[in-house]
Each structure stands twice: as C-alpha cells, then as structure tokens.
Amino acid sequence: MRVFFDSSAFVKRYVREAGSDAVLQWCDQASEILLSGIALAEIVSGFCRLQREGQITDPQYRQLKSLLLADVEDAAICDLTPMVLAQAIASLEANLLRGMDAIHIGSALVLEAELFVTSDQRQLLAAQRCGLRAVSV
View (cartoon, helix red, strand yellow):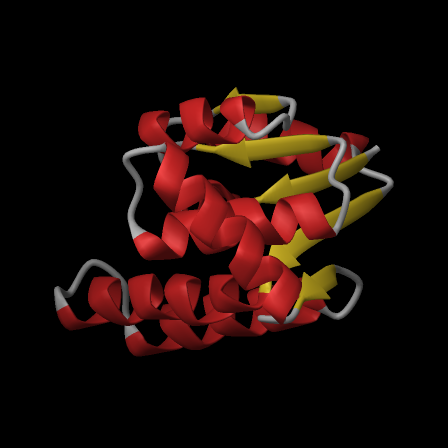
C-alpha cells in the first residue's frame, strides 16, 4: 500500500509521542512511503526546535536527522509542481486549511496515495473531502 505521511504524522516515527505506535505500524504496512518535499524541512525544523528548547541534545539531534535522511532515501518525495499547487489551491478553496497542509494534500493526490496519514484533524477532514482515504494518528 502506498502510504502518504504529512509532517505532523511522520515526525512521530522519530519523536515518541501519542500516535507514534500507529505511525510505525503504517510504515511497516506500506509498500512505499510517500512524502511531500516540504516534509523534510518541516520535520528538521521540529528537531531544531526540540534542540533549542533543550528537549534533545546535540548528539540526539544529529542522530534524528541522520535517521530521517536515511529513511527518505527509499521514500517517494513529491516535488512542488504546478499540478501539486493546483491541487493545493483547490483544497484551500474548499476547506479551512493552512497553506502547507494543502501542499501535503496536493502532493498525496498527485502521488496517488492509497492512504493519507496525519495528526491534524482539519487536514484529515480536508483530505477526505478531496477523495483521499485518510486516517488520524
């Protein structure tokens, strides 16, 4: 199964929090992991915030970043294309969404994801309205 993870969900693969077990299960079940190109920057931004706030050490930050970069070598990463932007704009016009959340939905639609995984309830509903099979973690 081709599983798309938005940043709010995929970060749970690296940072233990509510929903982490579900994310790990979806990763195990995926025949292919799909991500938007913006996910990497968003997830590393989260790691940097944890480091700045003293919640993780410098070595932990480097380890998390290394794990993420190794994992995405095998993932399908969707570039920001005119087609992705068109889908994102359509989802923004039809739903109450932030721009980056709409880009994740547009990316999942372009990549023809079989499942969309998020931890954002507004994004979950918007993804479902756009025709994606979506679950919350």
